[in-house]
Length: 131
Image (cartoon, rainbow, N blue to C red):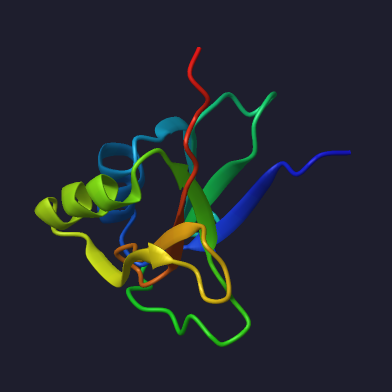
């Protein structure tokens, strides 16, 4: 068994695709409209679906706002340099909701940003070993 994808309902598909693909560097893997159900599914990720877990962005036609709720937590993405990543995201207009720094009760540098719908994304600094 393996994790296939996580689904997020998004309020504006074009804005969300721009954020996940242009800002976070994911690739649009596939997109399909379902006119009978009045929704569109777009799958994005850093790797092919056969090898990597991806995000399913679901756009329900005519819905422009969602109540995120208190049960949802966040998506986590690894970055090499959290301070530089946050500076770059700010330049692109991304909302940083928790500035970079050590996690509470730990030492790993983390930060949080927000996507256009309001979903939280945790950035975790993970230095790659030199080759």
